[in-house]
Length: 326
Image 1 (cartoon, rainbow, N blue to C red):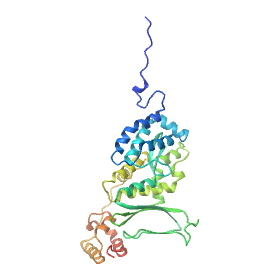
Image 2: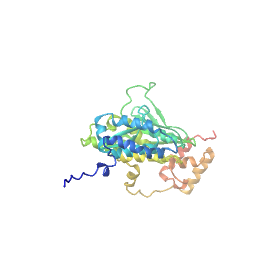
Image 3: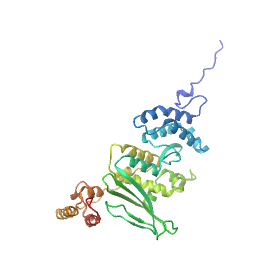
Image 4: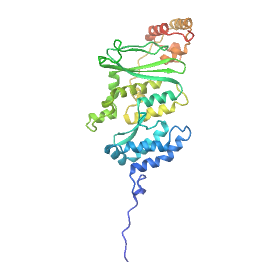
Protein backbone atom coordinates (compact mmCIF):
# COMPACT_ATOMS: atom_id res chain seq x y z
CA UNK A 1 0.00 0.00 0.00
CA UNK A 2 1.47 3.24 -1.10
CA UNK A 3 0.35 5.69 1.58
CA UNK A 4 0.55 9.33 0.73
CA UNK A 5 1.41 11.91 3.34
CA UNK A 6 -1.63 13.76 4.59
CA UNK A 7 -1.70 17.31 3.31
CA UNK A 8 -1.87 20.02 5.95
CA UNK A 9 -5.04 22.05 6.29
CA UNK A 10 -5.23 24.93 3.88
CA UNK A 11 -4.14 28.21 5.46
CA UNK A 12 -7.58 29.61 4.61
CA UNK A 13 -9.06 27.49 7.40
CA UNK A 14 -7.26 29.57 10.02
CA UNK A 15 -6.57 32.82 8.17
CA UNK A 16 -9.61 34.59 6.67
CA UNK A 17 -7.31 36.82 4.65
CA UNK A 18 -5.41 33.99 2.97
CA UNK A 19 -6.10 33.51 -0.72
CA UNK A 20 -3.57 31.52 -2.70
CA UNK A 21 -1.50 33.83 -4.87
CA UNK A 22 -2.87 37.09 -3.43
CA UNK A 23 -1.37 39.55 -0.98
CA UNK A 24 -3.27 39.65 2.31
CA UNK A 25 -3.52 43.44 2.19
CA UNK A 26 -5.31 43.19 -1.15
CA UNK A 27 -7.66 40.51 0.20
CA UNK A 28 -8.47 42.71 3.21
CA UNK A 29 -9.59 45.57 0.97
CA UNK A 30 -11.61 43.26 -1.29
CA UNK A 31 -13.32 41.60 1.70
CA UNK A 32 -14.32 45.00 3.04
CA UNK A 33 -16.36 45.81 -0.07
CA UNK A 34 -19.61 44.08 0.93
CA UNK A 35 -19.81 45.64 4.42
CA UNK A 36 -18.56 48.99 3.11
CA UNK A 37 -21.30 49.13 0.46
CA UNK A 38 -23.94 47.99 2.95
CA UNK A 39 -23.12 50.83 5.35
CA UNK A 40 -22.75 53.34 2.52
CA UNK A 41 -26.02 52.38 0.81
CA UNK A 42 -28.23 54.71 2.84
CA UNK A 43 -26.39 58.04 2.59
CA UNK A 44 -24.27 57.17 -0.48
CA UNK A 45 -21.48 59.48 0.68
CA UNK A 46 -18.67 57.50 -0.95
CA UNK A 47 -17.96 55.50 -4.10
CA UNK A 48 -16.41 52.09 -3.41
CA UNK A 49 -14.25 51.88 -6.53
CA UNK A 50 -12.82 55.34 -5.91
CA UNK A 51 -12.04 54.66 -2.24
CA UNK A 52 -10.62 51.23 -3.08
CA UNK A 53 -8.14 52.85 -5.47
CA UNK A 54 -7.17 55.48 -2.89
CA UNK A 55 -6.69 52.73 -0.27
CA UNK A 56 -4.46 50.71 -2.59
CA UNK A 57 -2.38 53.80 -3.36
CA UNK A 58 -1.98 54.49 0.36
CA UNK A 59 -0.88 50.99 1.41
CA UNK A 60 1.46 50.66 -1.56
CA UNK A 61 3.02 54.12 -1.08
CA UNK A 62 6.13 52.85 0.73
CA UNK A 63 7.61 49.60 2.03
CA UNK A 64 6.92 50.43 5.67
CA UNK A 65 3.16 50.86 5.40
CA UNK A 66 2.97 48.00 2.89
CA UNK A 67 4.66 45.67 5.37
CA UNK A 68 2.31 46.65 8.20
CA UNK A 69 -0.77 46.23 6.01
CA UNK A 70 0.43 42.80 4.92
CA UNK A 71 1.23 41.64 8.46
CA UNK A 72 -2.05 42.89 9.94
CA UNK A 73 -4.75 42.76 7.25
CA UNK A 74 -7.53 42.66 9.85
CA UNK A 75 -6.68 46.21 10.94
CA UNK A 76 -6.77 47.39 7.32
CA UNK A 77 -10.17 45.73 6.91
CA UNK A 78 -11.50 47.55 9.99
CA UNK A 79 -10.10 50.86 8.74
CA UNK A 80 -12.06 50.49 5.49
CA UNK A 81 -15.26 49.73 7.41
CA UNK A 82 -14.67 52.76 9.63
CA UNK A 83 -14.21 54.85 6.50
CA UNK A 84 -17.68 53.93 5.24
CA UNK A 85 -19.23 54.68 8.63
CA UNK A 86 -17.66 58.13 8.86
CA UNK A 87 -18.19 58.95 5.19
CA UNK A 88 -15.02 60.92 4.41
CA UNK A 89 -13.02 60.23 1.28
CA UNK A 90 -9.38 59.11 1.26
CA UNK A 91 -8.70 61.49 -1.64
CA UNK A 92 -5.25 62.86 -0.74
CA UNK A 93 -5.96 66.09 -2.60
CA UNK A 94 -8.74 66.95 -0.12
CA UNK A 95 -6.80 65.88 2.99
CA UNK A 96 -9.84 64.81 5.01
CA UNK A 97 -8.91 61.22 5.96
CA UNK A 98 -5.85 58.98 5.72
CA UNK A 99 -4.77 55.39 6.24
CA UNK A 100 -1.79 55.60 8.59
CA UNK A 101 0.45 53.06 10.38
CA UNK A 102 0.17 53.09 14.18
CA UNK A 103 1.42 50.40 16.57
CA UNK A 104 1.89 47.81 13.83
CA UNK A 105 -1.56 48.27 12.36
CA UNK A 106 -3.24 50.41 9.72
CA UNK A 107 -5.65 52.94 11.21
CA UNK A 108 -8.06 55.47 9.76
CA UNK A 109 -6.99 58.96 10.77
CA UNK A 110 -9.17 62.04 10.39
CA UNK A 111 -7.51 65.40 9.81
CA UNK A 112 -8.49 68.75 11.30
CA UNK A 113 -10.19 69.58 7.99
CA UNK A 114 -12.05 66.28 8.11
CA UNK A 115 -13.41 66.99 11.59
CA UNK A 116 -14.50 70.47 10.48
CA UNK A 117 -16.39 69.00 7.52
CA UNK A 118 -18.11 66.43 9.72
CA UNK A 119 -19.10 69.15 12.21
CA UNK A 120 -20.69 71.36 9.56
CA UNK A 121 -22.38 68.35 7.96
CA UNK A 122 -24.31 67.73 11.20
CA UNK A 123 -26.41 70.83 10.57
CA UNK A 124 -26.11 72.24 14.10
CA UNK A 125 -22.88 74.08 13.29
CA UNK A 126 -22.75 76.70 10.54
CA UNK A 127 -18.99 76.95 10.49
CA UNK A 128 -15.95 75.96 12.52
CA UNK A 129 -12.67 77.81 12.87
CA UNK A 130 -9.57 76.74 14.78
CA UNK A 131 -6.42 78.83 14.93
CA UNK A 132 -3.09 78.95 16.71
CA UNK A 133 -2.34 82.01 18.85
CA UNK A 134 1.19 83.41 19.23
CA UNK A 135 2.65 85.51 22.04
CA UNK A 136 2.77 88.78 20.09
CA UNK A 137 -0.81 88.50 18.86
CA UNK A 138 -3.92 89.86 20.56
CA UNK A 139 -6.63 87.40 21.55
CA UNK A 140 -9.80 88.40 23.42
CA UNK A 141 -12.94 86.37 24.15
CA UNK A 142 -16.09 88.43 23.46
CA UNK A 143 -19.00 86.35 24.73
CA UNK A 144 -21.53 84.44 22.66
CA UNK A 145 -22.70 87.26 20.39
CA UNK A 146 -19.36 87.66 18.61
CA UNK A 147 -16.39 85.56 17.56
CA UNK A 148 -13.17 86.11 19.57
CA UNK A 149 -10.90 88.98 18.61
CA UNK A 150 -7.66 87.61 17.14
CA UNK A 151 -5.37 90.25 15.66
CA UNK A 152 -1.97 89.93 14.00
CA UNK A 153 1.06 92.01 14.92
CA UNK A 154 0.89 95.49 13.40
CA UNK A 155 -0.73 95.98 10.02
CA UNK A 156 1.02 93.07 8.30
CA UNK A 157 -0.52 89.67 8.91
CA UNK A 158 2.53 87.92 7.45
CA UNK A 159 5.17 89.23 9.84
CA UNK A 160 7.67 86.73 11.23
CA UNK A 161 7.94 88.16 14.77
CA UNK A 162 4.72 86.63 16.06
CA UNK A 163 6.57 85.12 19.00
CA UNK A 164 6.17 81.64 20.42
CA UNK A 165 2.95 79.70 20.24
CA UNK A 166 0.92 80.21 23.43
CA UNK A 167 -2.31 78.37 22.66
CA UNK A 168 -5.03 77.37 20.25
CA UNK A 169 -8.75 77.99 20.06
CA UNK A 170 -11.82 76.65 18.31
CA UNK A 171 -14.84 78.81 17.55
CA UNK A 172 -18.10 77.59 16.05
CA UNK A 173 -21.23 79.41 15.07
CA UNK A 174 -24.34 77.44 15.91
CA UNK A 175 -27.51 77.22 13.87
CA UNK A 176 -29.00 79.69 16.40
CA UNK A 177 -26.34 82.24 15.51
CA UNK A 178 -24.38 81.97 18.76
CA UNK A 179 -20.60 81.64 19.00
CA UNK A 180 -19.08 78.91 21.17
CA UNK A 181 -15.35 79.08 21.81
CA UNK A 182 -13.02 76.63 23.53
CA UNK A 183 -9.38 77.48 24.25
CA UNK A 184 -6.36 75.38 25.18
CA UNK A 185 -2.93 76.62 26.25
CA UNK A 186 0.23 75.17 24.78
CA UNK A 187 0.81 73.36 28.08
CA UNK A 188 -2.64 71.78 27.76
CA UNK A 189 -1.85 70.68 24.21
CA UNK A 190 1.54 69.27 25.21
CA UNK A 191 -0.03 67.21 27.99
CA UNK A 192 -2.35 65.61 25.45
CA UNK A 193 0.51 65.13 23.00
CA UNK A 194 2.66 63.28 25.54
CA UNK A 195 -0.16 60.82 26.21
CA UNK A 196 -0.66 60.02 22.52
CA UNK A 197 0.60 56.71 21.14
CA UNK A 198 2.31 58.40 18.19
CA UNK A 199 4.42 60.66 20.42
CA UNK A 200 5.21 57.82 22.84
CA UNK A 201 6.39 55.66 19.95
CA UNK A 202 8.94 58.28 18.89
CA UNK A 203 10.02 58.93 22.48
CA UNK A 204 10.65 55.19 22.92
CA UNK A 205 12.69 55.04 19.71
CA UNK A 206 10.15 52.81 17.94
CA UNK A 207 9.33 55.40 15.25
CA UNK A 208 11.36 58.07 13.52
CA UNK A 209 8.60 60.68 13.47
CA UNK A 210 4.93 61.33 14.19
CA UNK A 211 2.29 63.91 13.20
CA UNK A 212 3.09 65.73 16.44
CA UNK A 213 6.65 66.19 15.23
CA UNK A 214 5.91 67.03 11.60
CA UNK A 215 2.60 68.90 11.90
CA UNK A 216 2.34 70.16 15.48
CA UNK A 217 0.04 73.11 14.75
CA UNK A 218 -2.42 70.99 12.80
CA UNK A 219 -2.49 68.39 15.58
CA UNK A 220 -3.05 71.16 18.14
CA UNK A 221 -6.03 72.46 16.16
CA UNK A 222 -7.45 68.95 15.80
CA UNK A 223 -7.08 68.42 19.55
CA UNK A 224 -9.06 71.52 20.51
CA UNK A 225 -11.76 70.68 17.95
CA UNK A 226 -12.13 67.21 19.48
CA UNK A 227 -12.52 68.63 22.97
CA UNK A 228 -14.81 71.49 21.94
CA UNK A 229 -17.15 69.16 20.05
CA UNK A 230 -18.44 67.67 23.32
CA UNK A 231 -20.29 70.92 24.03
CA UNK A 232 -21.71 71.54 20.56
CA UNK A 233 -25.47 71.17 19.98
CA UNK A 234 -26.35 67.62 18.95
CA UNK A 235 -28.48 66.60 15.99
CA UNK A 236 -29.55 63.27 14.55
CA UNK A 237 -26.61 63.50 12.14
CA UNK A 238 -23.99 64.03 14.84
CA UNK A 239 -23.20 60.31 15.04
CA UNK A 240 -20.65 60.53 12.20
CA UNK A 241 -18.60 63.14 14.06
CA UNK A 242 -18.87 61.25 17.35
CA UNK A 243 -17.74 58.01 15.69
CA UNK A 244 -14.84 59.79 13.95
CA UNK A 245 -13.56 61.17 17.26
CA UNK A 246 -13.97 57.76 18.90
CA UNK A 247 -11.97 56.19 16.06
CA UNK A 248 -9.17 58.76 16.41
CA UNK A 249 -9.04 58.34 20.17
CA UNK A 250 -8.71 54.56 19.87
CA UNK A 251 -5.44 54.71 17.94
CA UNK A 252 -4.09 57.96 19.39
CA UNK A 253 -4.61 56.67 22.91
CA UNK A 254 -6.42 59.80 24.10
CA UNK A 255 -10.04 59.75 25.19
CA UNK A 256 -11.28 63.03 26.66
CA UNK A 257 -14.23 61.31 28.34
CA UNK A 258 -11.93 58.79 30.01
CA UNK A 259 -9.51 61.57 30.94
CA UNK A 260 -12.32 63.47 32.65
CA UNK A 261 -13.34 60.35 34.58
CA UNK A 262 -9.82 60.15 36.02
CA UNK A 263 -10.06 63.63 37.53
CA UNK A 264 -10.60 63.92 41.28
CA UNK A 265 -14.05 64.67 42.65
CA UNK A 266 -14.85 68.36 42.24
CA UNK A 267 -14.90 70.59 45.31
CA UNK A 268 -18.21 71.82 46.66
CA UNK A 269 -19.56 74.57 44.40
CA UNK A 270 -21.31 77.62 45.84
CA UNK A 271 -24.07 78.86 43.54
CA UNK A 272 -25.47 82.36 43.12
CA UNK A 273 -28.11 83.56 45.53
CA UNK A 274 -31.77 84.06 44.64
CA UNK A 275 -31.21 87.82 44.71
CA UNK A 276 -28.29 87.54 42.28
CA UNK A 277 -30.37 85.30 40.02
CA UNK A 278 -33.16 87.91 39.90
CA UNK A 279 -30.61 90.61 39.10
CA UNK A 280 -29.27 88.63 36.16
CA UNK A 281 -32.77 87.87 34.87
CA UNK A 282 -33.63 91.56 34.98
CA UNK A 283 -30.45 92.46 33.07
CA UNK A 284 -31.18 89.83 30.41
CA UNK A 285 -34.73 91.12 29.98
CA UNK A 286 -33.53 94.71 29.80
CA UNK A 287 -31.09 93.78 26.99
CA UNK A 288 -33.68 91.63 25.22
CA UNK A 289 -31.44 88.55 25.43
CA UNK A 290 -32.96 85.08 25.39
CA UNK A 291 -31.86 83.36 28.62
CA UNK A 292 -31.16 80.17 26.63
CA UNK A 293 -28.09 81.80 25.05
CA UNK A 294 -26.01 82.35 28.22
CA UNK A 295 -27.25 79.04 29.66
CA UNK A 296 -25.84 77.29 26.59
CA UNK A 297 -22.58 79.26 26.88
CA UNK A 298 -22.06 78.12 30.49
CA UNK A 299 -23.50 74.64 29.87
CA UNK A 300 -26.01 74.89 32.72
CA UNK A 301 -29.68 73.92 32.71
CA UNK A 302 -30.96 76.85 34.75
CA UNK A 303 -29.63 80.14 36.03
CA UNK A 304 -29.68 79.08 39.69
CA UNK A 305 -26.88 76.58 38.86
CA UNK A 306 -24.43 79.34 37.95
CA UNK A 307 -21.39 79.18 40.28
CA UNK A 308 -21.05 82.31 42.39
CA UNK A 309 -17.45 82.64 41.21
CA UNK A 310 -18.77 83.33 37.70
CA UNK A 311 -21.34 85.95 38.71
CA UNK A 312 -19.22 89.00 37.78
CA UNK A 313 -18.11 87.34 34.55
CA UNK A 314 -21.77 86.63 33.67
CA UNK A 315 -22.64 90.29 34.17
CA UNK A 316 -19.77 91.35 31.93
CA UNK A 317 -20.95 88.84 29.32
CA UNK A 318 -24.46 90.34 29.36
CA UNK A 319 -23.06 93.84 28.97
CA UNK A 320 -20.95 92.81 25.97
CA UNK A 321 -23.61 90.67 24.29
CA UNK A 322 -25.67 92.30 21.59
CA UNK A 323 -29.34 91.33 21.54
CA UNK A 324 -30.47 89.45 18.41
CA UNK A 325 -33.25 91.99 18.17
CA UNK A 326 -30.70 94.75 17.63
